[in-house]
Amino acid sequence: MSNENNDKEVKKLQEQIKKLELEKEKLQDEVDSLWAMMDEMTKSDIENWAHLIKGLEKDTAVRALMITKKIADA
Image (cartoon, rainbow, N blue to C red):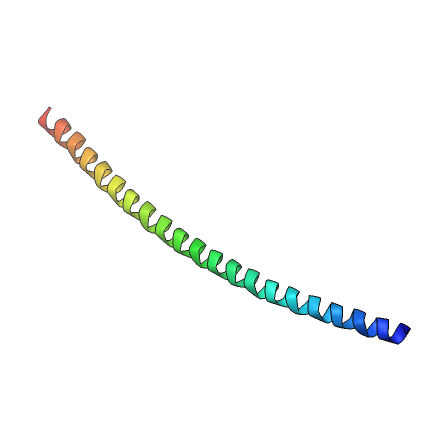
């Protein structure tokens, strides 16, 4: 009897292991997908900030030229 109970317990545990392995694969896919999204968002953020910085550089250059012109006119 004890041997039969052990066999049932082993089968039950093996089934549980299979379920957990499937769940682990599913969760790993979700993690990989989330990391891919984060990479895309980071890349997009870098491009957005670079665009803003270029705009600020142009504004700063224009203002510097305007100040220089005002001084020369005075």
